[in-house]
Amino acid sequence: MRNFVMLVCVAFATSALAGCPEDSTECSAPQLLPSLSPVNMGNMQEKDGNTVDNPGSNDNPPFTVNLLLSSLCTESVVIDKICMVGQSDNFNLRGPEPSTVPFNQETAVEITYDRNGSGGVEQAALVIQSNATNFPTMVIPVCARTVSDAADAETFLCESPVTVAEGTKDDTLCAN
Image 1: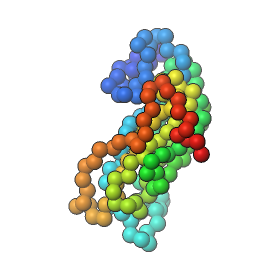
Image 2: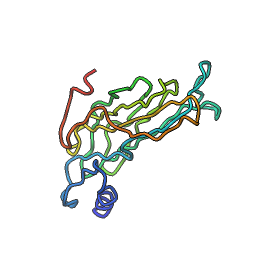
Image 3: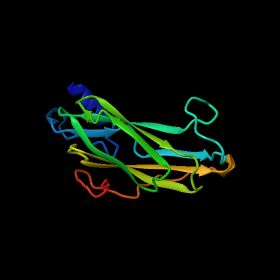
Image 4: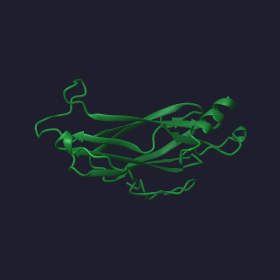
């Protein structure tokens, strides 16, 4: 088990959200690690006005990303709240299920983007409030861009509209 925690810490050592303690053998407080940060959904061609997303079809599937949240250390992570802030009208969340993540297990948050966007880059942030000591308020940038033609696709930087320092809790972000 010690080797697994050390492997996770080494694998994510370059990530700003690694949150691994310096001595992984002493890791006992709840810690949370996302599988992606940022979640850049990229450029997507907009749907025509009469098109409805159809998850059962290859013609018009909704664009969805499953973000995994892993519980590190020996205590369970309890997720209290989850919300989107910033330009979040075209992003929908489902999950996490379960909201208590036992040590060495994962839960998933499903993020779906509605391709009827404004045409500009939509920058939002997924905010996760939990008892994790590394990020009691975890902020993960989420972005996407709707284009009218594939030729209009351009690269863009995915930035969060809000930030919270590591180890800090900000209850105002998911106030509603």
